[in-house]
Amino acid sequence: MADYDYDLFVIGAGSGGVRAARLTALDGKRVAVAEEFRVGGTCVIRGCVPKKFMVMASEVSHALEIAEGYGWSFDKATFDWPTFLEAKDVEIARLSGIYAANLGKAGVELVHGRAVLKDAHTVEIVGKNRTITAEKILIATGGRPWKPEDLPGIEHAITSEEAFHLPELPKRILIAGGGYIAVEFAGIFAGLGVETTLIYRGPNILRGFDDDVRAHLAGEIEKRGIKVVLGCQHQSIEKTETGLVNHLENGMKLETDVIMFATGRIPYVKDLGLEAAGVELNDQGAIQVDPYSRTTAENIWAIGDVTDRMNLTPVAIREAVAFHQTVYRDKPQHFDYEAVATAVFSQPPVGVVGLTEAEARRSCSSGVDVYVTRFRPMKYAFTGSDERVLMKLVVDADSQRVVGVHIVGPESPEMIQLAAIAVKAGLTKAQWDATCAVHPTMAEELVTLKEKQSSATSAG
Image (tube, rainbow, N blue to C red):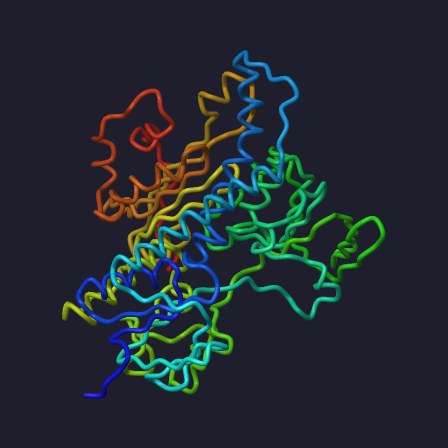
């Protein structure tokens, strides 16, 4: 057998790459991981963790409004953007340091630099005059924001990555996009007092989510002061003395201080040397893998967003565990992508697991039963707010299994994690109904829904 520098070389020290590297090193293998930026990857450094801090900071303004309805009074409450940024960056640095320390404790060598494949067993660390060989290679480079580079004036726009480091909080912002990132940042900036406009080319936000969820959230975020413009996109961007003018295809002209594109993310494969190693991409530009995460090169695997299967941090981690079990424990396994819960930290937030109503109608041969409730939560009823919660259960009419749960409202991400256990376990509507409610809570509605909104046969 060839004598390699390492048993495993990992390209990318995000959540998936770090987990795979640590598990393999703890098995006594020689492991190294290369990271060109900071350890922690998208989630820790420029994704879900700093974004959640921003969400929590922005939610305070709404909490203060509610508090006044309960008799509290606040004199000139203010928000200081630089203070928040400094605290956020300190915490991110701490978390990144923990990731790096855990790699060291497991015996993984951390290589700071960009790794490029030279062949199936060799990587070059760019600018470091270092070439490394490895028996096996794992690619976990994640994804990067996409924006339309051919749009006139696009150089004046930012992406989510720059939004974490704006030198000052703008007075006006326009966010282009309708997915997770777009609606989350719209809530963040609106909550921090920024005049916020969200534009999306589609008929409604959150494409791929249940239609009731999409419609409900669109209405609720407008109650938070966000202007939503649908069925429209940019024609050009013009920089003027007073700001940035958004020229839209419907003829509208909107002037803002910042324009942020949240129009999707793409696998980070540019200049990675994939062709030299025999690693092929699929039609969508992601690394092509089999169910066990193996690429078209026999000794190279890929996990996480770079494969564009299900782009969620916990999924990347589970893919890493499956890779380790398959390759180093001789226990072939692959991650089960069915009934994976997810949350959108919009304001109000969204929590979903399982099938949308439309998906269920296509896949459930005997039809579906649908249960829906919309109500004003107790907290808001006391203050006179007209904000409402949506809860929806989608049930296979034949087996009576609950195949989809959709929630829009406060604490929905927390509720959906537990609901996901029941959906994954295949529990029936009768078993949900047999569960005693916890009162008074919003979550009790999930086990007290009795009246069907509809019961229809699948349209095929």
